[in-house]
Image 1 (cartoon, rainbow, N blue to C red):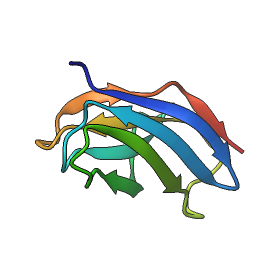
Image 2: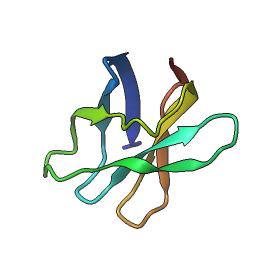
Image 3: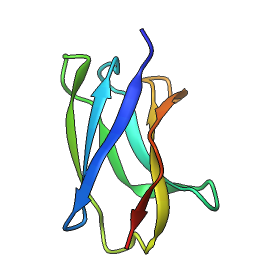
Image 4: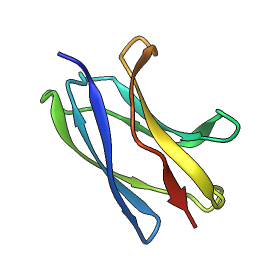
Length: 89
């Protein structure tokens, strides 16, 4: 089973995403597509025992306009999946 993170939408600085095959303690981070840098926040940690679900990620004001993607890391901090690119305006 391959892990997935799927960007669903962005409205009022809140990202909606679906995840699948991610276990407890997996993390979802925001990555700047141009620099490749993971942002220090927001970081969402999967706490549900269900391997799939929906995430709502509020963007702090420190997240500037640009193109980003979501990256899922497994419980060991290793790459698991990435979403499509999306723009924050």
